[in-house]
Length: 430
Ligand code: AMO
Image (cartoon, rainbow, N blue to C red; front, side, top):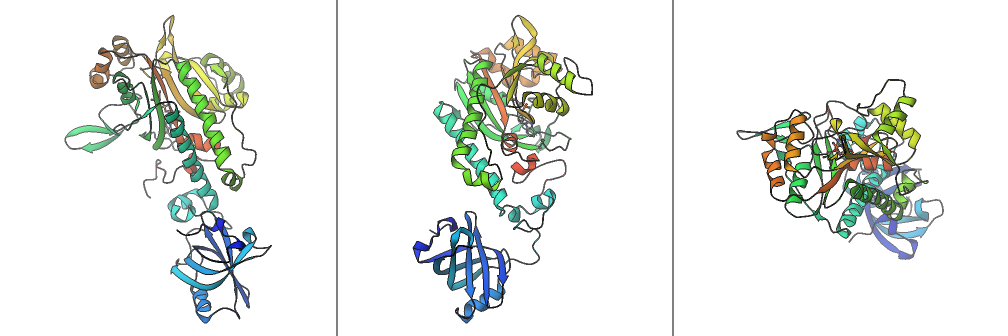
């Protein structure tokens, strides 16, 4: 196996290293190449009078971002990155990069996000970008470990479906032989069916597709949803689980990604404190009405301006609970004594919504009624409704946007920064 650059030390004597030519400097009698891999940078120092003709010929052919390999003695040098340099005994050009480069990897020349997304193959070489996705990988690992420890079963449900879950709009139709089909908006119906199937605790981390027209810094047309569903649980139970999970994800990043956080300039990275405040929807509306210029009233959805106003006041992660039944999906359980309010919640970061969830209706007739009340045809939901007739346990769950979790955790200016190949209103390539 090759030696990652971060592990090269002067004590090793002779080493071989391989990576990208990050910077090339020719000072006449002396030349330098900064050799980079995803772990770091090491300096190759070429004293022209002391190295072979072959090395000098190869040096002339190397362009920035070419792949090169080197063997040679490692020496301590104070001024070089990591305090060491390699004086080459051999130098090989393995894969030459054309010039000019479509993007400056060294970040000396700033680039627009569109250019960066078009050239992820270069953008991804930037330490900041690598760090974002290393942290995302750490978070997903932490989530899976958390679910495994809490006895969840990981499920994978179909993304090709015949029915809408979150209402009748925002679906991408697809050509599916002679049938009408869509890309799934949420695993909602399937995770509930698995409660009927007796799985008790399930989770899925997978894609969701939303044909939302708006092109904003927090919406994607293809996002990753972290979904759970738990039998014999209330909305309170799954809210507790959610805040525990968020804290665990932050904790895991703090413990394992110190270098990446430093690269991103997040030296004051802090772990959210439990218990997150629980604010009722009615109180949330009061705050928004007080702080916002535009009018807002009980029964309105919370738009971006309202979310910002309330988030500013709260200043930390918080839940909005007890939503009007009329503005939450049909599957949310209404309070028995006050059915115009339901046991639904949103988890909010001061900047945006992270999750939605609810205790669900487990009574077949009530669910049918709520589907009709939303103007949907219950006959189209027969595959979903039928399981409610054969012993459906009470259950609750939530869905959390993975990209929003990363965007808020790393204070990224745009959700697209948390996705390798974002899909938005204008972008389907690459
Ligand atoms: P909801 O529609 O609120 O709830 O989605 C849950 C979470 O998914 C993320 N999300 C998005 N992220 C980026 N771009 C989008 N277009 C987008 N749409 C959603 C958000 C959001 O909070 N079935 C319910 C969940 C449940 O009750 O279990 C649902 O899908 O972070």
